[in-house]
Length: 118
Image (cartoon, rainbow, N blue to C red):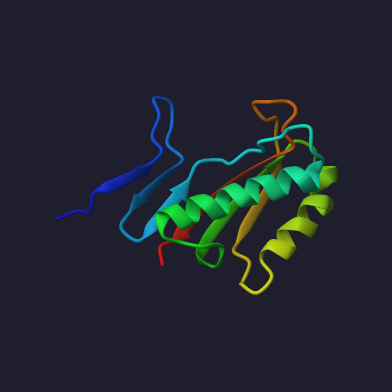
């Protein structure tokens, strides 16, 4: 029998995450305060990822892949400083980082992760 798919916080347009088998896929996480600088927005996004991973039964040390979308590629060094501190003590996962327009022009970052469950 195929395991069921479980969704976290489903809405009409999207869910915050989908869990199937031993893997969780998170929707793109965006800043809660778009007036913050890149470091602040990155912290906000990573806090949301921590919370969703916890709710799913995972953690940052179980991330299999991360995709980081930035509005301006020149701000990656500021993002990397926060990112590297967040992974202190655990192995950083494979990551792709690219520049693209974001839905809200005030957002500087969006992060998508896939993780293994604990």
